[in-house]
Length: 359
Image 1 (cartoon, one colour):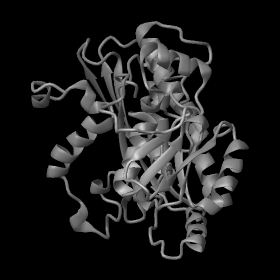
Image 2 (cartoon, rainbow, N blue to C red; image 1 turned 180 degrees about the vertical axis):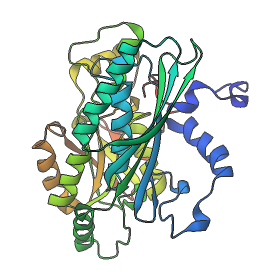
Image 3 (cartoon, rainbow, N blue to C red; image 1 turned 90 degrees about the vertical axis):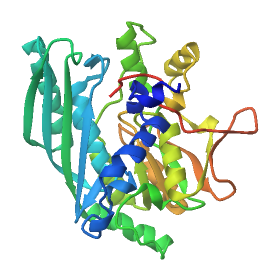
């Protein structure tokens, strides 16, 4: 980043990765602190998990500025609902209500607006959650690229989460956390990826640039709360979950590394990537590990339950391509990948997602 870029906010500051995390830590945390009100806020802003916990309620707010607003496999409306639902679910909570704020650009066709609303309604029905309040604003033509949507949501504790935590404590009696958090990993824990990488980012890029990479490249955007609840309630043993959105798998694993203070080793030959996505990334010089996803999660689990979690994932439509891709380790303090040609390479935290405005 140039010295001039360091004086102003740029697109990379909203693209996940190192630049965005530095923006949050250097500026936002400077003015907003919630640690002083613990235990009312047991998972505070400073934890920088995918959502916060207030009392026993999980709370999340997420804004979406994807460009274009329609792309193969989805649109900004579906993305906004699924993004918030999934961020609540990965802490182990059940989403119960959403609030929606629309910022619409003057000139947006009513037909497009209705298409977005219909898509949001379908996503809400899939997730079994309702939009219960919100707000609408309109700005001048040319300001947004169509519209921007914010969706906030609340989630509650469930019996499935309690079952999950009981299973964790069976194998780790000293475990004290009451939620599924980025900071829960320890050496030996297994890392599971629920499906193929890069589908969403490449689908949005194809719409941005008018390029057809392959018929199989469509966004993976979907609500994952029912799949997650089944894993927690039927199997258990899950310590951490995260949806690898902006910055992709590389950014998500580095967040776990930093918050859990543990090394992570993944295996290149176990990472599922569709051939069309791999070919497109090679053609464009993009690392698929850094590309955002909207319908996948990574799971950190006690080793004793990893195979059962994988088996359950593979029995679902959302997790049919799941794989155990690695484990946490105390042999080093970084994220590394065992390559197919032998040896290891460091997977650094990306500066930002290589594809702009994917969510």
